[in-house]
Length: 100
Image (cartoon, rainbow, N blue to C red; front, side, top):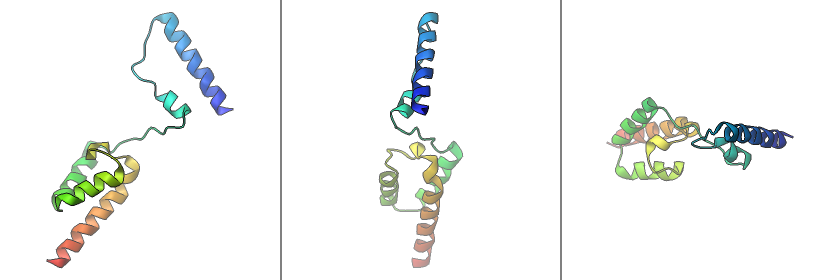
C-alpha cells in the first residue's frame, strides 16, 4: 500500500513539474522506492572530532576506519556509525597510551 502511495505521489509531482516546466536536480524518493536507503552523514564538528582522534593513531587506522564504514573520506561517514567509530578510536588510543 505504501509503495502505491509513493508511486502516486511521484506521478503527481512529475506531472505538475511537467505542466509548470519545473525540473528537479535529484530524486531521492525514487531511491527509497527502489529500496536504497539514503544515509545522513556526520556533521562538520563530528568530522573534526574523528579527524583529531585519527591524528593520534597510525595511518593504517584511518584506512581501516574508511574500509569498515565503506567510505572514501571521513566526511562521508554515515551518522549511524559515528558513535561506534568514536568509541573504537578512543579505545585504540587508550591501548596505545598503556603500551608506552
